[in-house]
Image (cartoon, rainbow, N blue to C red; front, side, top):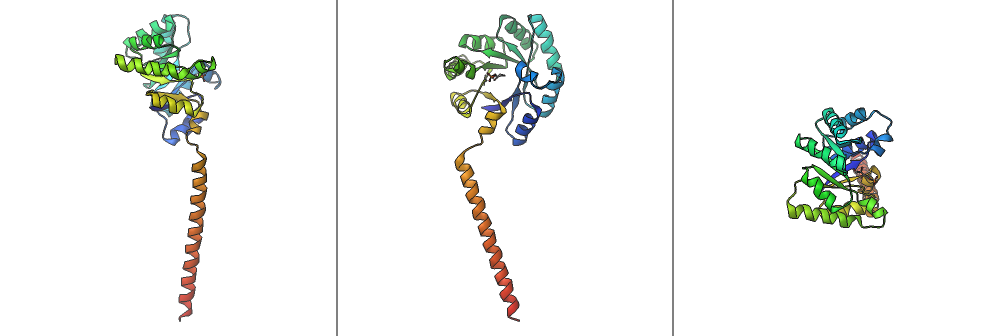
Length: 231
Ligand code: E4P
């Protein structure tokens, strides 16, 4: 399962690239709005940092407008994936773009039938929003599991991108279910590293190493001291 960041914040993206684990980025209009940059400039800046897929969403009413916007976004960089919403217009636009060879990410997916539609238009990614389903007291992971199963049975090529992940357990669960990609906020990716026993283990190793080096230093100074006395 590949690990993507769900953010448009450049500093966080740079940090995750530095960790050597980031394979792509997803953005959405809400995340882009926080950054206060022109959207095409923001998308370009992200694609300059991340070699993998960078999803950028089209915001428009009609399929024609979405197709135009999608083509313009794709022209920014070769790793732009065009995000279209799971609406009739969004799916129609996604179908046109996919036929042109533009990689499409169908977003706001909340049901297995919506995921089937995404696969049938040849989308590169389908994005079920796990956390938002949990938010309405339903089981987001059941949806993810159902989609993964349908895609396997049907042999669809579209990759399942588990989205709206809110905590590390979501990430582990998505991996266990066979999601192809997990996208998460920076705060969640940071937590993937953490375990208190790792911290305790590191403290002990560092303390033992220091004591060991100090003991060797004492031993060396004893030897050189006694060597001087034999003359
Ligand atoms: C995915 O592409 C979406 O941007 C994202 O995962 C939505 O997450 P949220 O429900 O936490 O806003």
